[in-house]
Image (cartoon, rainbow, N blue to C red; front, side, top):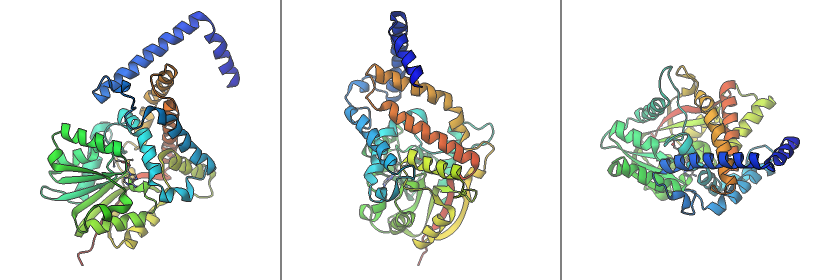
Length: 373
Ligand SMILES: C[S@@+](CC[C@H](N)C(=O)[O-])C[C@H]1O[C@@H](n2cnc3c(N)ncnc32)[C@H](O)[C@@H]1O
């Protein structure tokens, strides 16, 4: 690798190579700038001093401190320190929200896909399916726990006519969500709150919601039972709560180094305290006082594995990776941008492996009811 880099720097001293490289960099930069600007619908946002979620000068230190956090844990996940640090998850989402929205869409989750079904259709079907499990309909109010920029919320409101309140720890996501809800004409049927879902009972009154759902968000909870207890408090008696959980399946073998490394990699690349087992999750629901209605692994349904979407996006991801480097090189993107993308690529590789090995599911559905008495 050092030899290759040395060779590259010698070649860059050649004026022709230098100009070709500069031309390629400028073209790449322009390409990405246009794409980002188009995406943000604001051609001048790149000059505003913000990358979107984070002030430009904080991106580098943000990703460095994120990576350092995991280095210190020597590949064993984030350990105990994250248990009281939702700020850590907040920092993660400040770093990656734009990348997710740019590369994946307004919904930050996976989907079980049928053969011939488009990615977008499968995402919407995944969302409406969870709304059906809680029986959301017009006149009802549901809580979306860890709502991202609100892709699921908007699709669910459109499909059901119910009202959805979302909560996310990340302020930038709140702004994006509000804007996108308004643009979609759904401001009246949606609300968005910035807050820690581990403190739901401080944010909302007891017995407020007719239902609740969490899509690939409870995995960030420092403790699943503690989160479920909070949800329990704010639900009306008899109301249903469904969650797509990120869990280790029964195929996970704690004595298999590959399994351990893949799951650690998933935790590291996604700001998770750990990846829990199915049994731990069901026990957490019961401990919180819920009646578990049913559970099933949605990852085992559909003809196309959920991780296939990442495999097909790989070429675009590598292209984006090169372009983030180019943009950083020409100082168009803030220092640290490519390092954030590197983290996301590592996360994607481990998620794919976890899916291929069948040791991990990002959509283990658990449906719970708060007892009426
Ligand atoms: C993978 S994203 C999923 C977002 C959304 N459910 C979707 O599918 O598009 C996880 C979400 O959980 C939120 N989150 C994580 N920890 C949180 C906490 N302690 N309190 C509130 N939100 C949190 C993040 O801000 C993010 O919006």
